[in-house]
Image 1 (cartoon, rainbow, N blue to C red):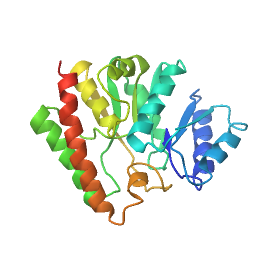
Image 2 (tube, rainbow, N blue to C red; image 1 turned 180 degrees about the vertical axis):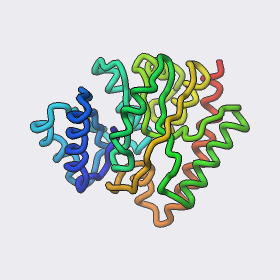
Image 3 (cartoon, one colour; image 1 turned 180 degrees about the horizontal axis):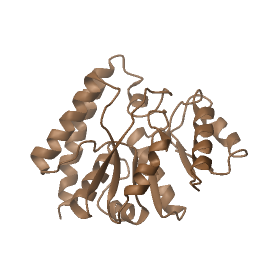
Image 4 (spheres, helix red, strand yellow; image 1 turned 90 degrees about the vertical axis):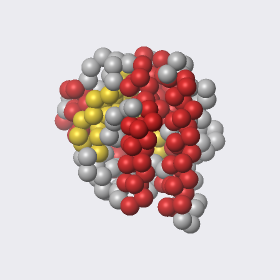
Length: 240
């Protein structure tokens, strides 16, 4: 789980995670990468490890932004020797109670994505999501509704294969490229409808990259354009 400036939501996040795992009788560790938060997020996380045995806390050496931090989370989980990865953002927009939907539908060599069928975010964000969807469909002949959803389940062994198809760890759109990888190299993607909630925290997603811009809409449009170029370049590696 990537995290940036979530000091106001961390305690609730950890309490919710503990309640969820206990009520569902699941043993899941929570691996969090702090992207050099400017508030007390990292300090709170370190202190919380004493209370929550499931919590594993790491920190980027530099502020890398959302996409590269996601990559670091996945890579660290692989290094720690886990077999599976359940991805999720740290801003409270995903319902932990949807995790069993992923677990119950998992198949080997497939990527399970929690598809946000009714996104609470409108306007420019929704437009960009539709643009990416159409781009993948028209130019790469890939049909997927929510390629960038961070709520996902896949095997560590598949991620390690994905690593071989990228030339850099500084990936702006880690989750989108991972979705393309599964569609072209593995057994595909299964999208499971999930709940999408109002943002509880303030730092996750592209928002922590856009918070220095006065006009977030302009930033997101630029982000979308660069993302399309990243997808177009990646296709050469994954189509080999």
